[in-house]
Amino acid sequence: MALVNRLEDIIVPLTPPNLFQFINIQHEKIIAAVISQIELVMLVMGIVSLTAIITGLVVWKSSTASEIVTGFWSIIFTIPSLAMFIFFIGPFGLGWLPAVIALVLYGQLPVVRNTIVGLRSVEPAVMESAAAMGMKPFTVLRKIQFPLAWPVIVVGIRVSAMLIFGISAIAAYVGGPGLGDYLFSGLANLGSFNSMNQTLVGAFGITILALIFDGLFVIVRRVTTPRGLRV
Amino acid sequence: MVSSSSFVALQLQGGSVSNTTQGQEIRLEKLTKRYPNTTKDAVSEFNLTIPAGECVVFVGPSGCGKTTTMKMINRIIEPTSGRIVIGGEDVTKSPAHELRRNIGYVIQQIGLFPHMSIADNVATVPQLLGWEKNKTRARVNELLDLVGLDPSEYGSRYPKQLSGGQQQRVGVARALAADPAVLLMDEPFGATDPITRVRLQKEFRALQRELKKTVVFVTHDFEEALLLGDRIAVLSDQSQVEQYGTPLEILSAPATKKVESFVGEAASVRMLGLVSLSSVTLAPGTGDGPTLQEGATLREAMEGFITGAKVINVGTRGHLTFEALQSAISSTRKGAQ
Image 1 (tube, rainbow over the protein chains, first blue to last red):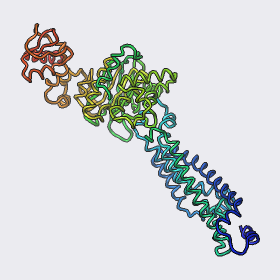
Image 2 (image 1 turned 90 degrees about the vertical axis):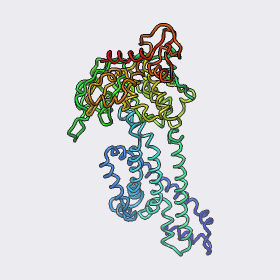
Image 3 (image 1 turned 60 degrees about the vertical axis):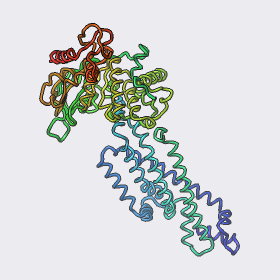
Image 4 (image 1 turned 90 degrees about the horizontal axis):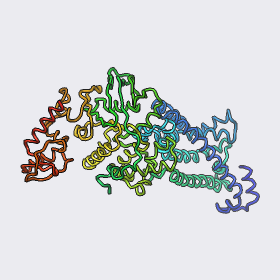
């Protein structure tokens, strides 16, 4: 990023450009950063959703197992993100890998918890009826319990996605992709030529992306919630 | 919106309802349930034979094990020991899901699937059995008609959009969908308001007389047991059978103190509602008084006497005096004893 700064110093006249000029000059790089930011979050959310939902499906029946699992992910959740990212540099080096691994760990809690809560909140009478109609246990899960728990699970994924957006900015510290770069190099060089613009692009960029994703989740939840639950 | 005789719509349609499976006998032999870490059986060596095509009501105080006993028949609760024989076949160890597809199940909480339309709810068991789409759809329409819900109006709705009484009608339709031989009902009308309850009870009684399923019906309401049961099993703690007999037998000759306390006061008055005028010997000719149909009960005749009538005419067959009513009750008592 320091290289970017130096290049800007050469190209741009002595008065620093305003934010819009800066975006205009750097739009190719910014777009690339936005795309890699989205890729990172989508990749992490994919892994998180899959693993956390499977975990929830495995443990929901036993309250002890559920408590152990949510307790474990709660502890992980309290580790400061910077510490976690730096910790993973040792085994996984710099770049995408440590970023993805750390984010996947952070994202677990909301999805696991909501999967458990969702699966448990299906009325016992509904579950009993399903079994009494002659559904096999897996059919009960597939046709009745999971569809009914789904709206709660989606909310968990949504909360998790917002968390991931926030924390992913910090992933730039370990060479992770995305807009975090702008934020950090801006902050690091505060007072220098384009630092304010960089910080703003990083901060606003992530915020706007997060809001767009949040909106998308509202739509996804609406579309995927069975009609009978919406009436 | 729903006619009071809607369950009875079946009779009007005659043979058009494809109800071919009649009830099968259920034999419960030494059926026992003990939960882990308890010292006492919840249900202890329960023996009972439920004749094919009859409605048997398990009645007893709460916590006596009547629901547990019923739920062991379709093995929603697996018995600890004992045997379940349905239609001569021992089903104690057969695959539970196959057994259950031949047993309709209606519970107080109804348990409709909230994310599925009414039609899909009713189609549950036919779909599990792999029926063709057209056959399933026809059957669903037929059953919704049977329980008094217009398929074109209600089929595409969702459970939440229906009242409690309507939901329980759907519950009954869903239970009957695959034409099972046996129907298990756990206080099915318990959560509805008193007016709807009485209506559902009467409709169900008419429906049962038509369909002749073997029904096991659980309730703590003795009046309901009298109204619906061909036979009543009065149960006490650990599902001990205190008495097993027809409503008249239980009213006229309670076998134990516990049954007596359950029957309560005024057994003769309750009996009035169980004796039909058609079974009473009448004096010939008509007298000066109101006229009742043959299908009416002594209870309605009694109502006439209390409000001042000297005689009650029964159709054109003859007339009933108060003395005749008294002797009808006492002979019924003797007959039952």
